[in-house]
Length: 272
Image (cartoon, rainbow, N blue to C red; front, side):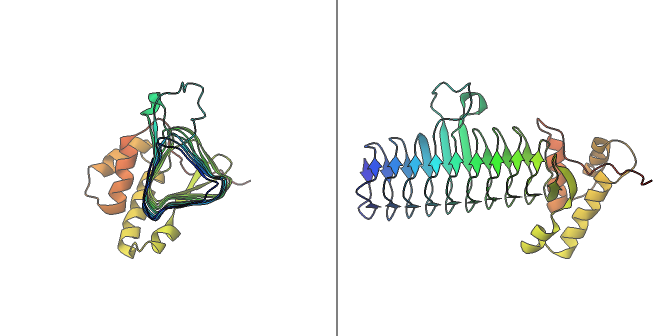
């Protein structure tokens, strides 16, 4: 066991001999820290938290009661292989959050970036890759192999299908089921998510200027509101033209492809 002199461990906490606890980290009553866990400096682990497996958590992260981090993946193919969970710095992990390590078939790693917020009851499944400054509202869930870009916001009680990619700065509405990829800066909602436009509010909050927003809006309209050719044809035509910033990021995301189709706007129907 390696525990920094300045760490504060409640006497009822159970810390395995193999664990590493950084400076000024606090561990509350009845929490359990497994043998291969590495906690950085300045963490605050509240009461009744379980951290297990090959789990690494960065400096300044706060873990609230009844969170479970690093327990076996919820995947019937998992047979006890050594896989990892990596959580970044200054992450807020609220009550009843669950995060699982990776699986051998999925690359063996689940990673969460820095400065994220996981509200009550959220779930990060095996082999997910979550960027920086991501927010999951209450009971939002990620199935296995999901990728979430920086600054994405996922609304309460939404569910993200396995292998879906959520682009950077995207917004997923509450109670939305997402089974297709969401473009960067996109905003989706619905029982089965459809593209409802761009996440303009999020862009304004993060300081995108008017010129950047107008360029992205023009790219969005050309892709999703154009009448000529398929979506991929329109994207390819735009890719051959000069583009930068958010517009280029959206084009690159679509061109990169993935395991799922893309969320698109709802088809318009003529009113009677």
